[in-house]
Image (cartoon, rainbow, N blue to C red; front, side, top):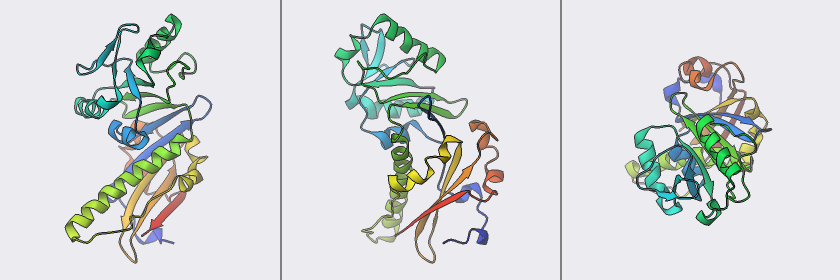
Length: 253
């Protein structure tokens, strides 16, 4: 086990920080430190997405709902445009445009309400749409609020986000050292399930890499519950990191 007392790490010594707070009853999760690109990469491939608030000149237009949408094949381009624009995002995924045309006036009104208020009137999962997510982001508050049809997808998402960072780090290391690595250490969803109960209270995940005595990636978990609003975490990050982690998960090559 790593001796955590040997070195007090500052925020910049970590590869990534991610705040996660799950509301199990209402099936949503608040994230901070998660970009739209990271979300799409972690849960993908996405279905088509219906834009509940945003305008997108390269998208398509559904006459029945009077809303723009992005087909699955166009999502990578939309992600890039959205990341560059840094605007709030409100969207819901759906399986087929023909299903959009079956939405009742009541259901359409509910979707407009979500886009306007960034919260649903009732469950935001529709039989017609077969949607898995409702994604609502706020640039000002530095958060993403995501409704999940299946909350077990949260562990998958967190796992994929951190593994994506590890893989990128290992690619860069391999490039500079000219040494091919045939084994990249990766976290598993089973490992992340150890944190399932913790994320109901609001936690900060922080990952770093150590080289000696052998290569390892380490995720520290700190329960910060109601001490901070998500946008305040980043201003007080170094102070938070001075607290001993509540849990530590490490993987070795």
